[in-house]
Length: 434
Image 1 (cartoon, rainbow, N blue to C red):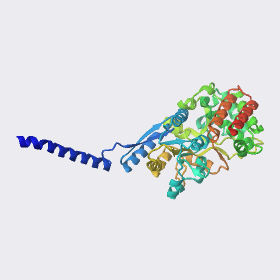
Image 2 (cartoon, one colour):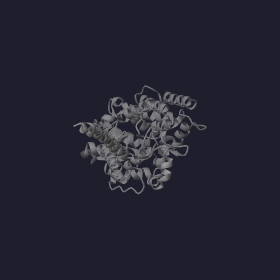
Image 3 (cartoon, rainbow, N blue to C red):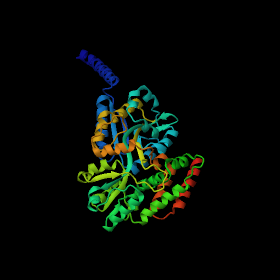
Image 4 (cartoon, rainbow, N blue to C red):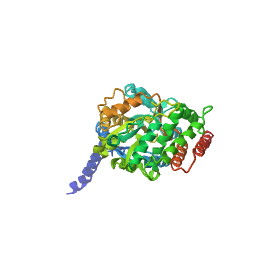
């Protein structure tokens, strides 16, 4: 008994040492470690976008044991605010998407976004998959800060083919044709256009197209770059505001348009109910409608924004983007290499094919598109002499907000075109001297 009593503590100690050693070995091999979490945020809330991202994350996790992806999908305006707060608090997601342009540039200037150029240099085949023009919105000082993930997109005028046939009207090619079409629908108690302009960027599309059709792309470019002779008070910007207010005064929009919310389908519901005949919106609307209302999708068609008599702009120009979702990595990400592999999976062939099936046109080369509707949209962008990125994404954030505010005020008839142009120019001068 005495021997057993003396030996038992030694046995226990030996077993403890063995268990500790085994635990150390397991931890070293990664079996006992908790998963390394990569947080991913995006503004993919329409169609099958969230599912496509989640399936890519699942493939990544399978290919990279020990990693876990937490994906979140947030509506446009709420997403912009959440991202800004997260970066301001020093707690951004590891992987996030933006529209590129000015807002992303602000994060880049603050040192909050990883320069992806070295990754692309190591993997030239990956970079070469994408359309060359898709890199412009995420390239600063020759360095790339985002991967074009989704959607060659242009703003077009979607319309209800059945209503057009019922009232014997054809898609208008000129501004005067558009006004005549609007009169026809009004005479039958149908709003010509559905517009949900609480979000402001929705109405901005009209203004941007009018500036382009009236003055061509260089008018905006010179004003935005503060180039000699460039000014947001240029007569073209004033005239664009006058055209916007001409439409409003002519009753071209369904009532209450400045208070309707696009994010909850305020404009689409008017289309579905036959209460409005047209909607100016980005090409992604086709995917949203296909998912929300497949029956209405069969009635859907589109035409380019009309030309303006005497305008200097090329009617083939489009407002849009070659990639309306660019995926980046924050500098606070602890797993940058793995995060880049996740981005590659989100943009792999499987993901891109799924996006095409969801009525999207990814910004990659040699893309096979069977849907005649999407083919026409693809050709419209491919043949455009100019693809102007949305002003609120091209411009620095504060100036982009002034643009949206003044445009919404133009639609509300609470600001004259001259005053709106002067306010925009004053804000641009302030921004330039900051």
